[in-house]
Image 1 (cartoon, rainbow, N blue to C red):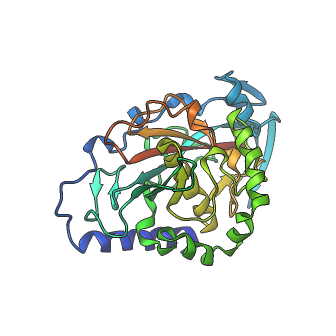
Image 2 (cartoon, helix red, strand yellow):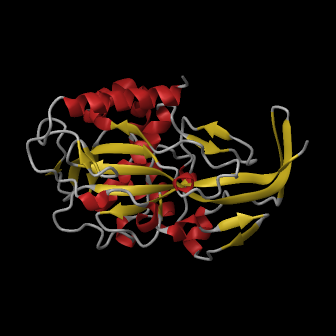
Image 3 (cartoon, helix red, strand yellow):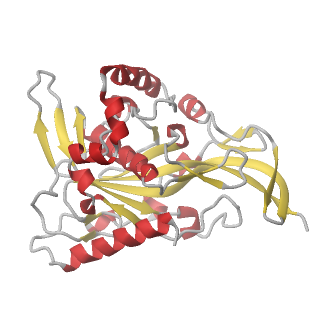
Length: 337
């Protein structure tokens, strides 16, 4: 069993153990309407722009162009896998293949419409003010990460070699991770985070925030999430001025964490295979908020909430759900005998 499958199996086993320990005695705060339906919840315009043979089609939005820097620029490609060799046309597009819950209600599996844990306790989410004169707040929430290959679920484009074969799965729930509950414990497990907690690293994130505001992503600054904060410590605490922005920050941090756990892959630049991503490439991801209010478009990692979060926090709704779109580069062709 490879590392990704082992991680999924362990997560699912722990989730089942928690759910069987006792049914929650309170009314579930997970609304039935949050159950994932790809036809109605996914913002399908986010798959654009599509590049076929070096020609971009489907979107001419300036922000899309900035974020689409890693599109397939060369028209032709050639791949080899074992004894199989094929020529083809390079294709790139944005694929909706991961789903992320950010919940203040522990055990609230929004995609499943299920509530696994009783409310309250140390796993409960919270919001608190910070007495530092900045009017900022701190949020704590849990994160659930799902394998959700939408194209396979809809039985579309399954003949493309860059479309994943995995089925729908719960890959991670942070309720079972002690490191997510404590930033201090997280720093012990991920000691490199101490290096990025110094003022110089923080100043570098100002440049990332400015770039994110115009749709650009600075991949070398992997510890920065633009206006959403920092990837370290890898825990459920985040400082915020905008709750929607904080949800997005925790969703992005969850993606980064999956890479540090060895469970994140992206398609290679030649379009022939997948490669491991222990450190994420931020420009290969964009997020669409699905709950509590469906977003009108996708946003790059770190985009300031003032530019997109208005009207996305419905009163009394403190759980959020995101679809993560990944830039896929594919060599679509015919194999030779």
